[in-house]
Image (cartoon, rainbow, N blue to C red; front, side, top):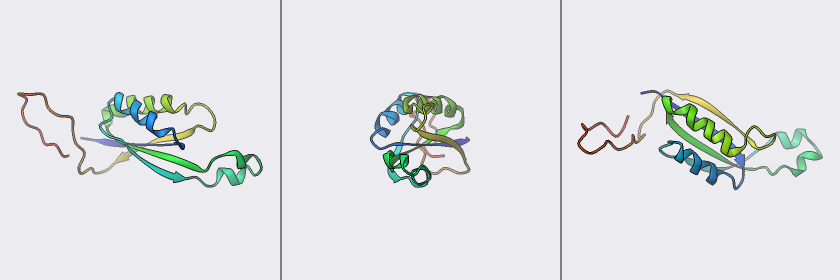
Length: 115
């Protein structure tokens, strides 16, 4: 099975709602952590003072065939087409250990929970 990792960086306080939307779109799990941005504020000088450097980073490991749907949902929920709302990108994942596949229906053949 092939996997991707969706990374989304947004303003502080926005990640929880975006993560909820990703889960509704089929993500199996989401990791959120705090971060601090640097670079854009300094380049914009005076105007940059109004940009909060505190960010939240959302990581979502997806199966390849689910990536586009979940990515599109994240972009929409985060309003990333609007300037200054954040950014998102997708990376291929070479190896995964511990990714829990969705539960198999009752009576279905057992499949490994870990890939």
